Amino acid sequence: KTYAVVNLDDLNQFEAGSSINEQMLRESNMVRGKVAGLKILGRGELNHGLTIEADKVSDSARAKIGQAGGTGELNAPRGANRPRDPG
Image (tube, rainbow, N blue to C red; front, side):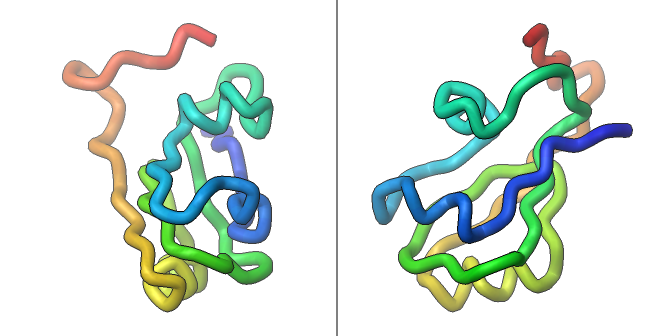
């Protein structure tokens, strides 16, 4: 499976308190093409709290998200209840 990979330092452009998900990242052109989901990695620092919805979150990213006052939520696995993104 190929995941869209986004690092924490890429997310600082979003306003504090924002909810970040694959669709929002597609709209900002940070995610393009067909992917199996979104994976957040811990490169860099997160400067403010965000609510991040992703399919996978690395341990270091999860810790830094919490330290910045945000939350990391794992999406339910894709399947019967979650259709694939057509884009």
